[in-house]
Length: 80
Image (cartoon, rainbow, N blue to C red; front, top):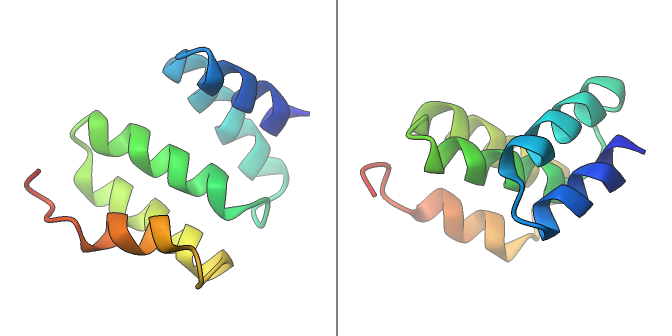
């Protein structure tokens, strides 16, 4: 349920709402999905928390090693 609410908030541009729902979702189900961790990583990156962004992206890649978007995000320089 929290993932779905997060997806809806994300789709409507509500980053804070999406983050809150995604964080609840992964606390309940840590292996929920690589897309959740990628979005949390994207929000951390935009909030200038590069270390957390990289950790979240690595978690996404652990869940789905074939996710090309995650791979591309991990290859981005941390200073962007």
